[in-house]
Length: 228
Ligand code: HEM
Image (tube, rainbow, N blue to C red; front, side):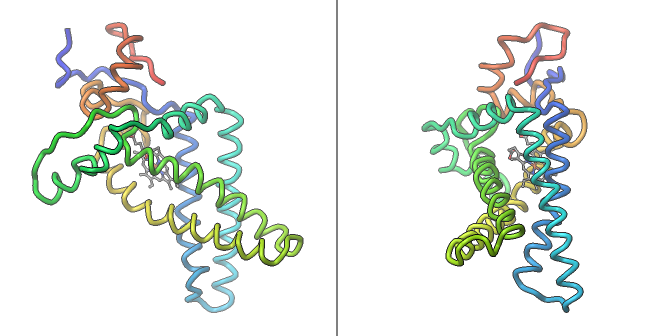
């Protein structure tokens, strides 16, 4: 029998295809966010702005190819992620009411009760929804603005520009929060950035419903725990 607290058995949380997708996403999105802000505020001289635009387009193409390739090659994982992100309950409301207990922990050093979460907590689900919807809007509007800006009516192009700007700013604003929490939750960080696994005790503490509903039923002692 294992005691949760010291149970180091690995659970595969982020399989290799997800990790590669996420790496290419971050390598394309970080330059996109930086060059997007430069294109918005135009602080550089002409050559600098042209280079900024070129980097923005190349990184945008890389992000688009990453998203399309992952959707085609790992369609089951995309469906699963959509299902997880949009499965809402009263627990999500309660989670947002205490913001996952993070402000209390960081600012007051206090531990408050947090409703049990599934594989992703409510904040991650909100970020996931923004990435799914905002990312799709960003890619589609970006393609029109880049490739056929003169083929579409002026008003439509203006609207797409606004959609592009709003979704880009939204995702860029989320990014610092995502980064800080990703590093703070170090077991998850190693899982996504290195080997894919989290120790059982970490999953049981932060994602108890995931463990109860999806891990425990398929777990056999001694073997690597199955994942979804
Ligand atoms: C250096 C940059 C980044 C780091 C270190 C990082 C780290 C992580 C980690 C550790 C997770 C797993 C969280 C868990 O297991 O619970 C994760 C998940 C995720 N990442 Fe990133 N990430 C980065 C950039 C990005 C970017 C640029 C995007 C999209 C624009 C993104 C989108 C996501 C999404 C949608 C998830 C799943 C939901 C979530 O956990 O929030 N990440 N990331």
